[in-house]
Length: 291
Image 1 (tube, one colour):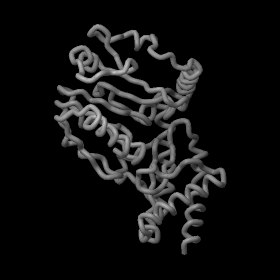
Image 2 (tube, helix red, strand yellow):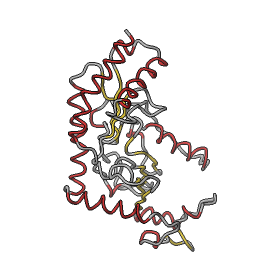
Image 3 (cartoon, helix red, strand yellow):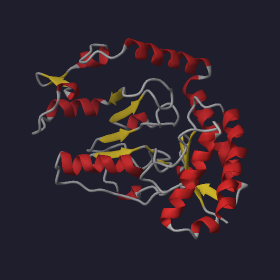
Image 4 (cartoon, rainbow, N blue to C red):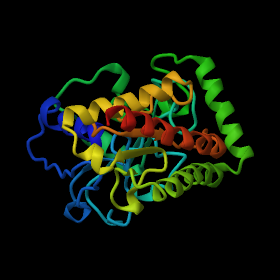
């Protein structure tokens, strides 16, 4: 599920140094084989691969009766995708993604099963105060009732509350998901009518509706060296930036070269549609300048 999914593997294996663990991987554009998942073991996964444009389509692969915990990094998924909350035990996300707002604020939701684990297991490694959720062997519920460890910016909190009020006005969670899906639908119609570009995610059901990743498939482009492909894709994004049309829509630095377009609920579909002719223009520019 992209670079951030790989980061969780690094944390588990190299930082926590857990030995009894497995990693199930897939190439960019593909979802790992979820049938290989053993739900009696703890599962750590990303719901939405922001660098690959691949999302988990549903929670059908998660057993209702299981011994393990499901720990989901749902950044860029919460508020934009229909998550099966009853099957998720620890879910994290951040304010600045789907709802907009200030960065660096992580959110955490824990299930009763996750709370029981906190009280029954003590790790052998030290935990910084910021990550200590238990006190005297019991879950410190005050953290979830407004008590603070480190005081966050109250302006950021007010900004998040304002975002939630806006969400209620447009139809709540269904309205947010519909707005994001409409952005993906608009891009899908455009991609299907263009022979030079395609989604990085191979299966339509796994295509992210927030972090929409595209790859150039024109034979001219594919015949270039890997270094030249990266150069041309970067130039395409640079042209759009110079025109003031779109900013920072190049692929993630460690992902295959291409485009990454944000389709979250705060993006107006009309604005996204207005971008599309510019993508054609920028591509024609790089292709004609190289021929």
